[in-house]
Amino acid sequence: MATVEELTDRIRQAAASGESLSRTVKLDLKGEGFIHVDGSSVTNEDRPADLVVRVSAADLVRLGKGELDPMRAVMTGRMKLSDMGLAMKLTPEIQALFERAV
Image 1: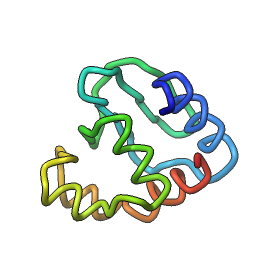
Image 2: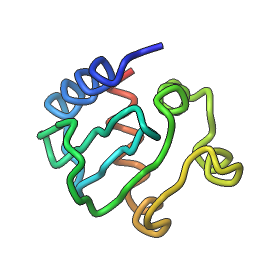
Image 3: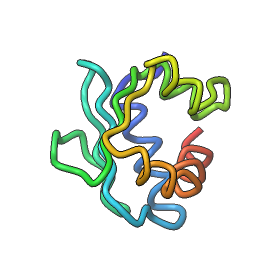
């Protein structure tokens, strides 16, 4: 399984190689750490964000690989979102970022 540092590096490279997200996103990796994405800036700081996604690192990898459906992850409690409406709006941007990160 990828470490938080490896995931951060992959997301950092993906954010630098394509269009950046239009809003800030924080991935809360359930006690394993944080990944904060603000445009092309990607850090492990626990900073405020427009959207907070709480998900395990293992499930984040599964989401990125398309092995876990995001809606199923939310419905089963494996992923929690701070703002469902904003998450739906950002879905294409987040998917594009994760596809570049895999």
